[in-house]
Length: 202
Ligand SMILES: O=C(O)CCC(=O)C(=O)O
Ligand SMILES: [Fe+2]
Image (tube, rainbow, N blue to C red; front, top):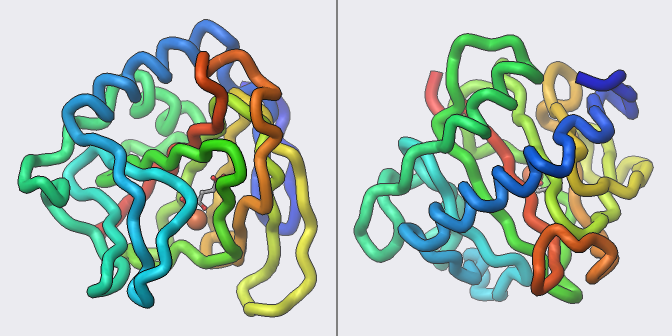
């Protein structure tokens, strides 16, 4: 694993995945999206999100008019696919933890998609880190502190980069301002995939 860069408590591992490992992970993610199709969620206020999402694992993250939460099934009623070994191995390599994540949330950013500043706080125990993996196009990742409205710092994440949000950064605000559409050739139709691995229940 490459050196870790620490920015405001966020641990950034540049080029954690080499190109062949990125391609293998994308193939695994395509299998997941076939079994549990990507959807464009709405917020509880009914505003459509610009990313498309699906999940793997024991539970998946859902947003709809009832709010944000984890659910044991896809909105179509089927169980979420298992988290692939390629992804569990990366989790273990990066965190050194025996405990496996319960959820692998998969976000797809097409041209113009973004994700507003938010905290990941729908999980039951914030002692476990969240691990985020970037695949495909570059994404401008914004990192803040635990208070809304504080100062932030941004970094372009590239395909194969991993970010660990643990410790003080576990509840820090973060978001993706924009992507550089077609900056990578990993996905034939362009776009960026981000996966986040979360322990949901302690
Ligand atoms: O796309 C990213 O890099 C971050 C995604 C994220 O923050 C989330 O899914 O909660
Ligand atoms: Fe997040």
